[in-house]
Length: 546
Ligand code: G6Q
Image (cartoon, rainbow, N blue to C red; front, side, top):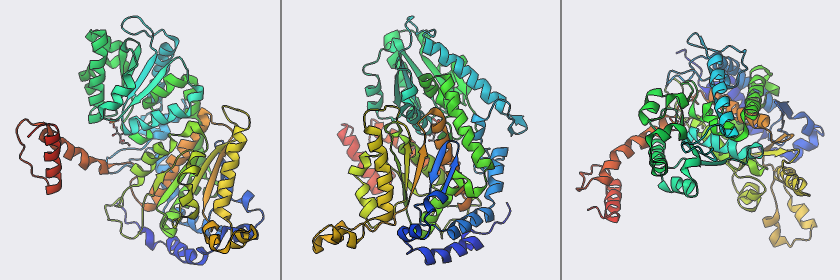
């Protein structure tokens, strides 16, 4: 691997460090006063999204330096390598080609000399035909009744994307089908999801890239028993179970007919897979045509990322701004605040996308990162609800929390004044965070002197506002791709691998060791630390196992 200059030794990084000292005290009030057109200049548009980044603590010089850093880190070369199908996920020896999942039919993207686009479209076509049969009622359950319920069993990347997309696109979903999502190995998840469903009318999608994940396989086996308790015939499985996986052998071992299996490939990471066959539940809900529109939105943002100069490139700008606060202002978190009830699972989805991707502490060559932070913590809730809970800390707490506000021009459920009220709150929050309210302004309101500090808003709290016309399948695709590529941009600059997730392994391995220790009939020979040993003993006592 070629020697690369450590991030903090790069010229642009050093210049940014010096520049930060000069502008850290500069207030957004001053920046806006100095440039009356700031709110029109610091904006960018692409793939149906409008990004206002004027309320960030940046000057033209900041942006120039951040862009230089991107160039010094060869972001261009890294973007090209991803789109070309290079094996940029070096710790797993894999290409990273979620962009191929939404490439048009006539595109050509090669992995090991093989054009993968025809395979992608072959799976999409099979999914479309299957979804059409289920939605029309042509696909019948074992007893001849049509399917009325769909349960997706999966976890992590095989759950969060499907749940988020189902919720986000519910407006477009058929109301003839009930959708449930089971992820947790806690039996409560399965029990609550199925208690009012009739197995004779239920289709179960077992979504698992590996088809070996403990939680998913446990839930899938329980689902099998649940279905057989009603249908009482092994032959029923083929009518009620389908699989989404890369592991044909395990699918067939489980007893699912591989004719009812929808495949994907090792170059699709779990958290980047909602637009692969993992999106089968999404397609069943919104229909194949809307699913293609979702893919078209993803693709539009892919093209924007690939071809737009960095100074107007939304994912690049968002990635650089995130790095600016994370690495120079010491901001540990980013709040994602969608002002749309349909996007209520979007922050949870983004948590996996961002934190599993960039929660890394060694560089690509294995060097421990000692002098800069990597992935920030993403969190959030839909507005306006969050305003009545945690926004207090964003406005007046001691921490700096950059915010992403997301809003839409038109509501999918226009009811009276609701939408204007909703959107007014986005603009008001971003304005209040940026400009605050000075002590003088508070005094003018006649507030007694002792109360003035409590009622003063310092302001200078940065935010982005992302606006789109309406929450359509295309817009959702563009929005997800925006964050995917912003994550990659940050990962490239930090010189880490955003596409592996070794950090989730250790706990899984230890759990496998602990399961028999919890379940054995005789007292186990415990060799953990004293805390783990005591917890195991206490649990065994609770379960009446001495
Ligand atoms: C995502 C991760 C992880 C994965 C789940 C489920 O990037 O790899 O969240 O999606 O562990 O894995 P399976 O799909 O293999 O069951």
